[in-house]
Image (cartoon, rainbow, N blue to C red):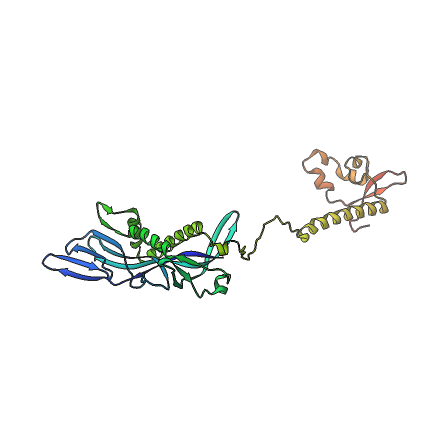
Length: 340
């Protein structure tokens, strides 16, 4: 989705030095005139200065880019026992068009910048500066998903007002030593903190600042009357999560197969037992009390029941077989042990 936004950039710049040996002072300055004077003999002291600038890398008077703020930062950090660290940067903020990819997941919206475009042309109004505006031109519609009938512009009055606000917050100094930190405003302190981490930290700070400005622009901006009723919609996709149950049948087939197999084995055993004439008491213990024992076995036992392990020693290795007599009674008789 395309939107009017704020873009920002910080680039390192050259810092010049001039020293007065008599006064034992050195003056550090940028091309825009931002200067800091410090003693040649002082250590453990840091200074920072930020001032609005007409811009060297980012000329604020450009008509091909709608700048609303350009400022220079100059930082001198001199820790005890270490060399002086000098850093200068030119930062700029300007209006641009951004193509955003918006995503909402579980009620939380996130956005990603897919592309941006900053080229403008200054269109003069009927009475000089009054009514003039910066119009975005040559927008790559396919890259930013811009409707060909949509016109993006920022009035000269809006940029002038915003420049006045930015001039006020991008002017100030910071002086720090081991015992105190003195700064002219909270805005300046935030810029000072951003410079202490090097250019990477400064880039993150300007990106966050631009993102905050973009949020305000999107919230406060109004479409012009020519576009207000266009009803333009931007294509997208939506997904809704729902419970989904997937049955892995092979895990359920195994226990089912074992149940069927056990039922089959039970039925097979019942049928085979009935076919072979196996008595119903085959698994009981009490029927054994009513079975006769061969007289020869009794003769071998003798007094074996009266001594420890007597039965085991005298008849433990005797092979017996169960039989049914002519009178229908069951009993045990000795066998040769070879299956006869």
